[in-house]
Length: 163
Ligand code: PNS
Picture 1 (cartoon, rainbow, N blue to C red):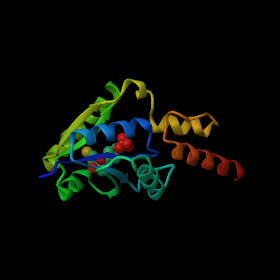
Picture 2: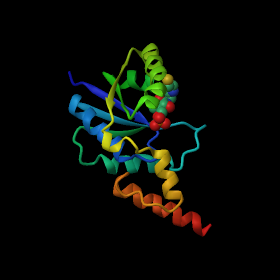
Picture 3: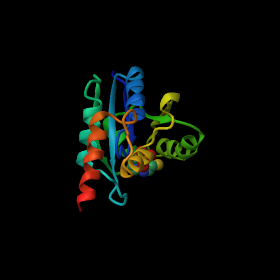
Picture 4: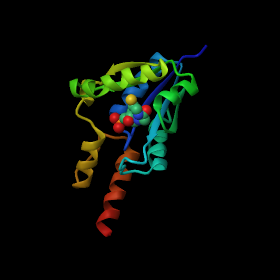
């Protein structure tokens, strides 16, 4: 039986920190699904299609990794696809504080365990929210996100300037 892991997140947009955690999750599990959350009450910068497309491009060279948009409860999705575990990256104690309750709730709801991978220290400063802020103010996001994401952020900014 193959062991499947789900790496969930907003991926708004996917960063090099995410890609590192996904790659390392794949080294532990036979298959990995990158679950791009769809939450209608959340104000994403990128549409669901854009977030999925950028994530697909970012993991295109990782064998055994696929990207899906996921609506509704992550726990229900994990049960439906037969996930062995949810995998999340932790950059530090703030991430742990945010993830602890979610991991216990997901186990309560579905029995699925969450496995934490410690983020690579060289990427511990990388967060989607900061990346968006840097791009919004015209800063260079090279080295923080895949090149296709940097290009999309640049296009968005140029579009916004023309409005
Ligand atoms: O990248 P993020 O925004 O930190 O990811 C949060 C995410 C998408 C993993 C979390 O909000 C989630 O699991 N959403 C799906 C809906 C759900 O299951 N909510 C209950 C979580 S206990």
